[in-house]
Amino acid sequence: MSEANQAKKYFDLHLCGLGYLSRVREVSSSGRAKAKPFLACSIAAFHGDPDVENGIVYLNLDLIVSGDKAKDVIMTYADDANGRDRKVLVCFRAGDHYISTYEIKKGDRAGQMGTVLKGRLLKVLWLKVDGELVYREEQDDDDESESTEDAADDRHEGELNRHDAREEGSQVEKPTVNNARPSPSAERRDGERHGSGFLRRSVRRSVGAAA
Image 1: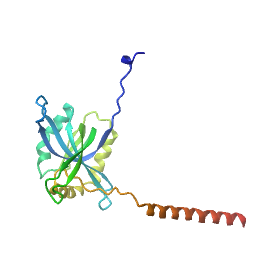
Image 2: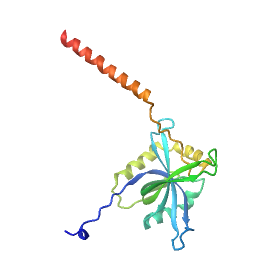
Image 3: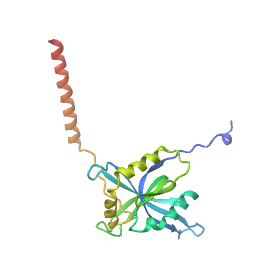
Image 4: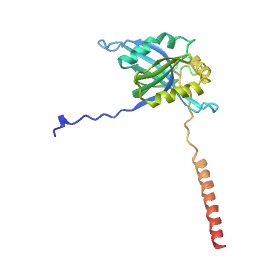
């Protein structure tokens, strides 16, 4: 079989989840004269345990909206998403991600550098405005859509106020996430405790067997 007849391989990396939609806008490129304007939006995606204090972590996404259906949905609810008195919660799928840096213009971190995850918004599974379901993807057989909707109804209402507090500083500012690893001394202490416990259990089993 020739190489031309072989199927072309491509590896996708998709991000699926929940987030608050904002900053829906049309972007015109100033550097490329022939580039067409495109639709873009921001999503403050979140994950974590809502029953734990500070258990929710936000990830800021700046996305180009791809696909006619996704564009129609985002444009339909653009005014709601851009209004500060409305909350638009979206279940989405995105891809083609890469990290970009920017200078923070407002808030306590003004002048510092922030990061945002860019990519493409591929699909809108469902969308709610102030808790009311206004759109659902037709013929959607993705179990994730229903499970995330139930989770949003039951457990994430308390995140609205915290989301407001984040927006006061910057519309795309990313919350600080502590990803520091334990120090070598702490890891060593944990290993010692684990090892000593294993030794004690082995001694008890040996004594019991001898008796």
